[in-house]
Amino acid sequence: MELFLKTNNSNPYYSPEKSLSELANQFETDKGTANSLDLSWGHDFPNHKCMHYTNTYEKYMSLKKTEPISMLEIGVCDKRFPYASVKMWMSYFKDVDFYAVDNFWGHRIGDKVNDIKQLNEQGVNFIYADQGSFEDWDELNTKHSNKFDFVVEDGSHWPNHMVVSLWKSIAIVKSGGYYFMEDIQNPLVSRGWFRYDNSLLAQELLEALSTKNFKSCFLNDQQNEDVQESFEFVDLVLDPTGVNYLAVFKRK
Image 1 (cartoon, helix red, strand yellow):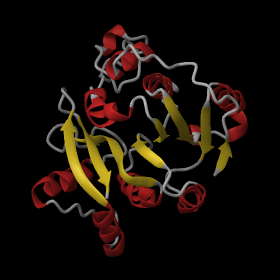
Image 2 (cartoon, rainbow, N blue to C red; image 1 turned 30 degrees about the vertical axis):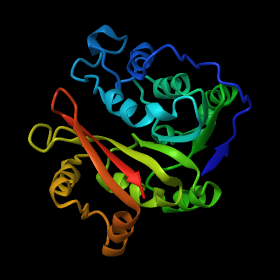
Image 3 (cartoon, helix red, strand yellow; image 1 turned 45 degrees about the horizontal axis):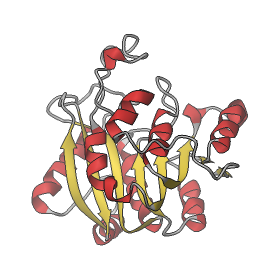
């Protein structure tokens, strides 16, 4: 893990007059509500649709919009719309200490020096780390214990990475804070569509809606117990196309 702190404490993006969905559509992230064919990347990726996640995010985030907060997002460099979500979050929150985490699809950090410098100059802290690395998570937990009001996981989408990230984030999410897990495949529609198939995780979450007890095969018994003791599973929202879920956990 390597941490690159922001070099500008101001927020050049803040746009209080716009909703989160409006900002998502402006910066062309797929978290928003736009028709993807109206966006610059839409015709090159006609099967990829916007997920309308911003409707759920605003439900849980709006009360903190003008308050000082800390936020971390895992996975910010989508090749179709790099750093679009970073600009969206920075525009939405008035006073946010934002941390962006990525490993640039396995690129060496030297290939992205200019990107990191630009993010730092725009008031964004950057962490070069691997979501699947316990060593990186341990370092992050040591440096930023009990720091974040919101954590958004939009990383590799491999189910083992996703669930381990939830477990490892116990140490960094404040009590009352929220953890969001994106792009969990609907097993009735999109099972097998993607190389990282995480539809089994969706099944576990769907079961947890009724049992109120999230337990994953990707964690051992102690890790599952840690998650159950630390997080309340509060929401599971299916995108309008029926392809992916967004899961919401609240830190106890």
